[in-house]
Amino acid sequence: MVLLSLALWGKLGGVSGMFLSTPLAVLMMAILAEFKGSRWMAILMSGDGEPYPDGDEGPSRKRPSPRVNAPQADATVSDD
Figure 1 (cartoon, helix red, strand yellow):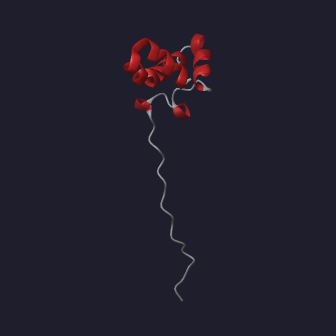
Figure 2: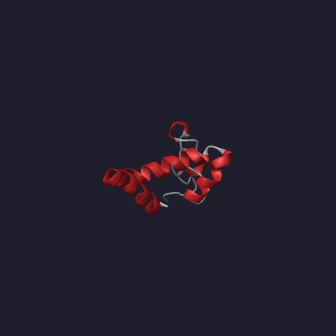
Figure 3: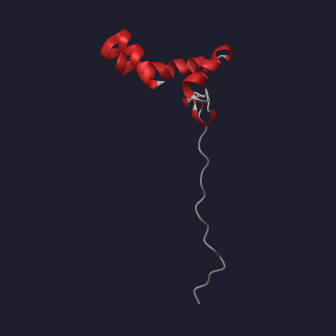
C-alpha cells in the first residue's frame, strides 16, 4: 500500500507529494475506519482496519499503564 501511495502522490505532487504520501495514506485509513460504510477500504489499506493500536481511541484517550510492583523480599530466608 505504501508503494502504491508513493506512486500516486508522486505523480500528483512530485517530490513533495512523495514525502507526504505515507502520512496522507495513514490519515485516509484512519478516517475511513471511523465509518461503517467505508470500513472495508480501511481493512484493505491496513489488514485489520484498526487505526489505533490495542483498541485505544487515540492518543488523547490513552489509559495510564498499570504499575508493576517491585518484587517482595522473601520472609522465610534467614541469615543463620
